[in-house]
Image (tube, rainbow, N blue to C red; front, side, top):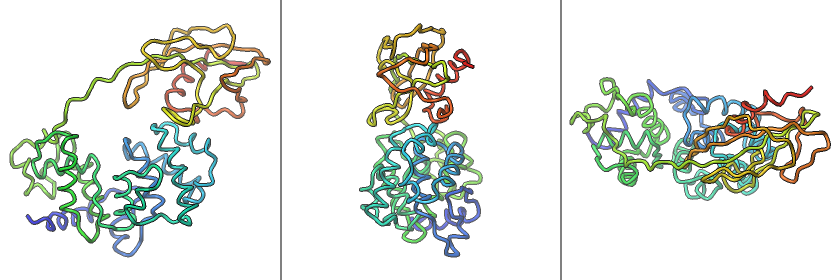
Length: 352
């Protein structure tokens, strides 16, 4: 099968079976001239990094209801955006989201550029996201390669080289198949194929539009591809979170530095995360150890976070944070690991 025939067959399949997503323009509407909104494509692609479509949809609806365009997001309060992002993880993405929105408004008159190289210069936009925006929003002939695309290419061309070593080779193969016309629909078609048919386990080869030319299927080992190098074992780090509540119901919280893990997010004061837990109370109090801990996994390590709790008087002061009034405190504004700590500790810190 010639390279252009791959795309023709795939686009025919996509026209009939495209997934419905809140940020996507369906193929029939696209053919009728409806153009995708670059803001919604950009926002969805940033949200989808390391996350599933199912997990992202509710966040996307909330974001676009509250901030319907890039100008609205650029003018948003940082804390409000970080609060809405809580639970999606990788909080540097939320910080870059704001930076990017403000650059688009300030330097590009509120209009997303269509050129891949210009997109690549915006905060938080790497090669994948730039290609996705250029292809899907502007139909530029750019190659979009995520995990689904890598899997489809590895099986289609029977690439035995393990990931991540094979990334460049798989990207080159995907580029070969990317058409000049309907590049955005083609990109979404390959991703849909990987997500719904050419799945990691038990691929549905019997209904795959590319089953006939698929070299891995011909060899009977499609389920073994793509191969991957063994993952390194994640280390475990330890820390302590201090959860203090004042007699008027206020909670002691601190905002983490802008740079680093959970940067810019509210959280409980505590020790650093190291090979062993270290006591570092934020104020003098009768701290209680409830004998419970939070377990959470980040990209590069596991965290075991011990808890210390205290009810403190109205005059209590701390140089490691500020007391947030009960009426101003929303647990949903906390990053996931801090919200886990709250859920475990809050029942024991009730006040009238």
